[in-house]
Amino acid sequence: MTIFSRYLIRNVFIGFFAAAGLLIPLFTTFNLINELEDVTPHGYSWTQALLVTIMTLPRTLVDLGPFVALLGGIVGLGLLSKNSELTAIRSTGMSIFSIALVMLTAGLMINGALSVIDEWVASPMQQRALQIKNIANKQNTSGISLWARHGNEFVTVKSVDKNSQPVGIEIFRYRADRSLTSYIYAQRASTAADGSWLLHNVMQKSWKNNSETLRKSATMHWQSLFFVPNLKELTLPAGSFSVRQLNRYIGYLQRTGQPSAEYRIVLWKKLGQPILVLAMILLAIPFTFSNPRTPELGNRLAIGSIVGLFTYISYQIILNLGLLLSLNVPLTTLAPPTVLLIIALWQVYRFDRQY
Image 1: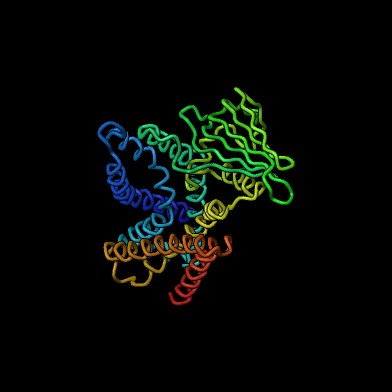
Image 2 (image 1 turned 135 degrees about the horizontal axis):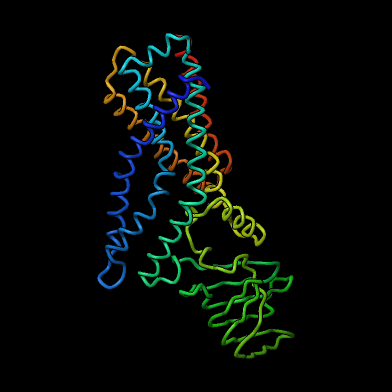
């Protein structure tokens, strides 16, 4: 890597941090306003709302990664253009295509950093923030009833208490002809790491030869159909999951015959976002070289903000439409950023031929 390449990458990172310093506080303010709307006199306090907002800062950075990459590229190249340093670099024989390769290298570095933050910082902190909020609001779950299936056995869990123990368990067993053979209800259960549950205050009904049998017992052992001992993990929104959690949960949903499209979209979005970051950082080149004699950085940033915001909103709309219309998940998540990357590469090729 030449000294000019390192200098370009350094300026791209400077621009990235500058753009992040502008956008993150703005979107964090919006998040704080949303959290303050949930504040109650004797529950969720404003200090907890502030803490939750701070804990979701890494998630905000990851979600805004493509937007920040575009503005960062514009700032980095724009400063070089404003100081005529870009012209000096070009005079050494460095083509626009070579500059684009350097920008892609910087984009890969940014993607690596964002992936690490997403997997080991943003997801755990966001999940912890949601748990703090739910506990403050005295919510046992996020309003989600859990259910699972294995063969002809179905189970539903009404809620999860503060100790992550299931409450309100119903177990249904069916025959091959879909007639109900037994029904079990337990007020609560104690879970173990090996997947076994000890049901408490159990009522069991069974049907055989047109006769019904009712039996009540204080406790009953049952092998859980849920794949994790901590059920609260299953009540969290899909967007807060790490890649490892998503892979595990999607496999569980598919094994138990439950819909998994929402979680597969989130997983594939994590694969599509790096492509979007590369596309957006390459789009900084047309912004820089489209008007080489007009170095007003403010105008380029304003237009870049509009393009970045439009792309960010459009991608979210496409993802939601894909989920609503049950479209192909890889196509829905990967096609938009791939098309944008092709457009960006074509623009680089055009400017490389032109200048």
